[in-house]
Length: 111
Length: 115
Figure 1 (spheres, one colour):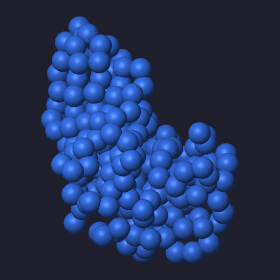
Figure 2 (cartoon, chains in turn yellow, brown; figure 1 turned 60 degrees about the horizontal axis):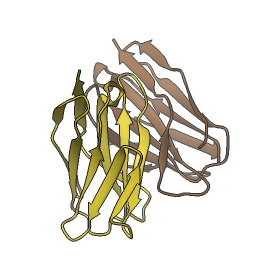
Figure 3 (cartoon, chains in turn green, red; figure 1 turned 135 degrees about the vertical axis):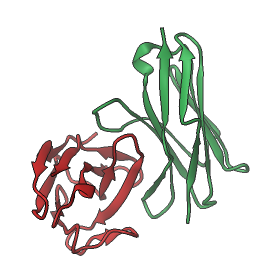
């Protein structure tokens, strides 16, 4: 079946450094790629998303890039802060409105 | 975005019993979904709740175990039937807004423990 692979499973970076999380999808019909942040005990929250007609999107310290040819997309967080510590999930969606989810990346920001 | 609430927020249940989880949205939404999330794991889609018709279940989930209702565009319920300890998990509803059919927003979740 369709799947989304997400790497790494855990990422530890020094506060102030950048973090990059990568996802690869298999369904060539995928056209919507959201990223969610989930803090411990909380609901997943949408932080940024991109559609297949766009190659890059930025929102302050967060950016997402999409390479449709290679079927991968990445989340970039610059100038990381302690509050960025959380689990991040990527997902891929197509016309049936369902999302295929990555396994998640635990981001640890070291002070 | 819509305000989504779930009831109960948590519960501890005995094996063999059933629990109904409610998901209420403060505005009409297009799609409603039910997910399960085990601790430290990703989200697993249980089913899509269809307004006025039977839910669409994913592989591995059946209506007898997880009956779902969606009587209108703002409300849905998920029942976990004949529970076993393996059903212990967090159950989340999500919705897509009127202006979008792909962006999903999540309710706060229901933490279920089955003894």
